[in-house]
Image (cartoon, rainbow over all chains, first blue to last red; front, side, top):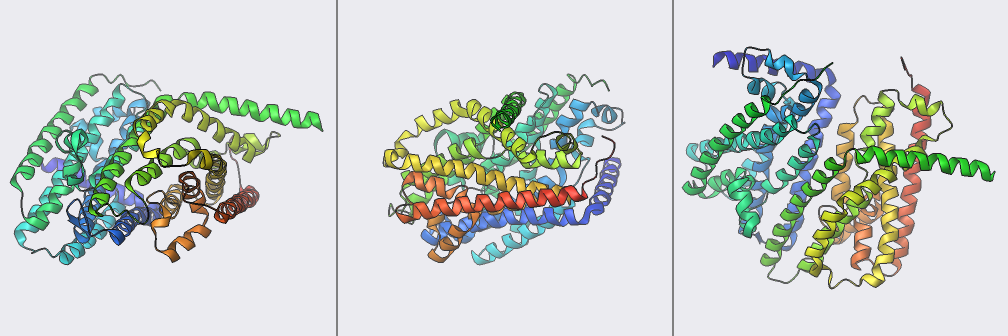
Length: 262
Length: 275
């Protein structure tokens, strides 16, 4: 375990050093993410010009939901997403060979190799907006509900990790899985919507099977109303199931890896 | 003179056809992209349903639920037909990797070359996605019932052509920054976010308070999305139609000239090594 931690920290140090070579670019990307976040908040602002409540969520509750979703997304982007995106290229070019030859878990190396420090800055922005929105609602802050909120956010990040890893594992069979990366950005857009708004089959699919409507909704609701055991319990179970399944699927895909001649 | 024009036409038709073949290689990618594009639509459908439920059916800034849905569905069609897909990154990598040298050595105009490739990729994209988008339109056809299409469609189609050129000239001008910057991705996404918000991709611009809406109407972005869709829905009427077309083409001319000026300046500092 400590060996893995050691490797992870070393990879993060390396990524940080690499990012700092292009400082201007680093700052611009932080600005990009910040603008998209601001765009979401502006949209909500426009909606609440005309209504007081959407699917039972008041203005500040909605801001909390959006910033929570942003926090989950930025944590995911900081630590995992870029690595998932690189997987098809590693497979196509045969560079995955180098990972296979290392005496550690291939899945671990593949999913933690790069780290995006810029996203961490955006996490802090999301946290500040979350805290402000929570104070406006107002939420009764306690050590217990803040800890639960943060733990649930970690679960949300793990759901994204597992699901995207499963999608990208398909690139062992398809040479170009780039379309899935764009597809994933579209899924993020569902995560920041109130789950009460979704009805019918779509609601069932995106809550219980592809739990995008839980990753931000559950932590935000928990902070507002206290812990809801049913949703929280389900989120824990589905995270465990998806995490295990994505690992199995990755190993299964790995057996179909044929490398590429260079 | 005629033969020169004929030669030029034959040249760019050839580029157009090559571009089409090249785009066809990525047809599955196009399809995944188009289908994934329905996910946010699904989100919009449910979110707006909830918004209208909470507005107690009093409407939302002059929109009813059906017209609002028609707005977002029309945007999907507009995107499928007009939005440049990664043209900016392709142009930037042409410049960065020195591939424009091949164009410079031939009697080819790079802008027209790129326009040909843009149009060909749009044609292939439209052909690939016409089935899912068509199915979507049929499924949601009720939302379009109240729109006086016979009257509005000709204007909307004209504005759509303008929108395609405006989107392309903006993309081209931004991609020219590759002469100065190593990586244009961040600038592309910054402009993209402004286009989305101020162009009416996130919500129709006429739900904004008056002064904000007035500002947006003078900016180029409204003429990429809001103007053609607003015309189609019949939300833009009277003199505003002709004013809109004038402003749209003025911005196209502006970004064309900016793109050309940047190209000329960029070429002065362009060095190609080892090609």
